[in-house]
Length: 544
Image (cartoon, rainbow, N blue to C red; front, side, top):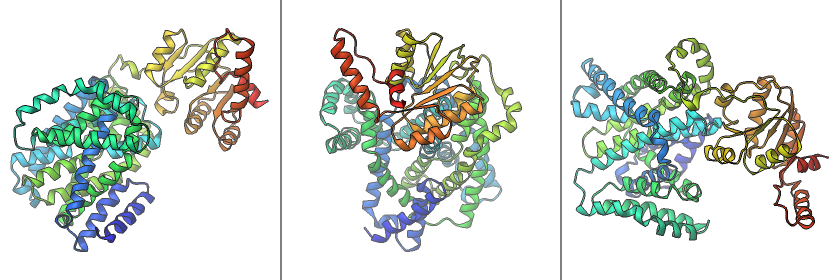
């Protein structure tokens, strides 16, 4: 492979990331630059193979993170399905009208081709949406979970298209794939034994590329569908997240090759750029349709708007659909370039709009709230705190220990906040007063009722950024009680004290003292249960 390919791709990726945009825009631009230098996709078969591997691993990674139960929520499966259908019903006549008005790229397209283009434009970007949610710390927020669920449904629609586009009926042996779930116990045993190093990576590649892609292709099905199916099969294993992380850089690197191949198909003409600009001008209607549909499922208008803006762009999966369509001769090659340009422009505009969506909502709140249907969705109603004296944000091991110690030493109501519903259910089964909510999510604070007699807030969340955000929100709500927080590093402790936190518990500094307390308790009272190390007693000793 030419060294210039790697150098130009790196430079374009760096330049784009410096202005806060996803590097994939830089990779698309690198493809166009390389085309100018005379390099074409057909001359680089290895690059095309890597691009195919990138798409396969992308679908495998989606499967690993997929909670099937989330797809059965009406706002996800129905919202995504209705939005896809209505988007296509809207886009097809609009594209036909533009062709009648003289846009040369559209004048010769038939109904089937217009439907393909509309289908490709109806998707939203998984790469962009996840990046925005991670940067804002809103992956576990309700709007974030709804957006990700819709994106996964769209990805499934795309995979079904890729499978159908193969143009042939599967072998009779394809029915045997229905027996794969019966092999789950054996696969999970192997999964348990591969450890955490290179064997884990190799196991993931074998599952994605051999058991998934190769096996499905051997029986006449699309290999991408196999990768997704095997990912879903492994999603229930305790190490599925670790496997997804171990394959992350392989997937990202191979996807670079996919975006490069788009640009290597040719430069956009001025007419192509103009049409891409027109397509981008249709995105506000895409957002409004999401807002309207999600409020029909009783989500708050704010939740619907945040999700709508997160999904208000064009998708790399639209490029994949277009690549298949152009490869089979259903669309002219320049359509791949047009959609690539529209995708890039949509990212350029979506980034600043997602940063200011809160201000936009405040401006139009009076009108947007009229769209809401009551009673609101159970997960989107106001959070009733009651009248607690102590509030614990984060009910993991440390928060649980603090809750139990406070319960045994102090009077007054204690309330725990935890974002994982399974932990909330477990705590409630054991008699603890815990409600579901993510204190690192701005949406949580918007739905929170005030607690007039709150004296102490314990920040027991594992991430320092989450604790900082919670402190900012408590100040915004004019909380005047005491604050205590856990940290892992000394620098973090000082930043919390600068923000007015009264008591800081350094987990590592106090680990020795906590261990000694535990051992002494065991030796003096061997019949007693082992105490949790993270207790207010340990906190006090750590800060004395």
